[in-house]
Length: 255
Image (tube, rainbow, N blue to C red):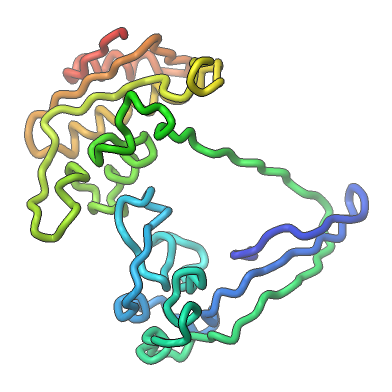
């Protein structure tokens, strides 16, 4: 497993490929790093945590999440104070194992492999372009991925169901929502605003799942409503799960 790496060049043929991989510097020696977290604790620089959908901040030296493999810290050179102005090095000063290496450089690795898997991935739809939903103007309007992180025990709020607007400053008191609405088909089945005329196929079921999980996480009765065009529950026992959500008090509103 090669982390912080990207594909450079491929040559050869099926069963005998020569692959060039560019491995970017971590600035932390993985052999020495014991993942104690002292470096991140002492680091003064905070940046947006992309893994947690920018709901909270992380340090310039970090692990993306607690189950990361390998569980070793890395320095974000684009945010690090030392790489920007040549000062700080707090992480190096407090690291108990001497794992920080600011002189780390990019490496080129050549491998011979028999086969290659092409995994393109995807980009989530940005609802900011649909101004009628006020996603950019109101912190309590979140995407499905952001809500997944809110519900997660390793997420920005430790799995507690709270309104993001109540976490803006340390002085504010956490507030749990009393009502949550799920708006379906934002970014799909729409040729006017986004050009995606197709059904995303997974949104109905993860919305239903999120309503059930939200009710379980809530410390008091929670009103959950899903506003939908069509409920597409095309999978084994999916419709049964949908009916279970209805019995649990989730409201399904055609709209």
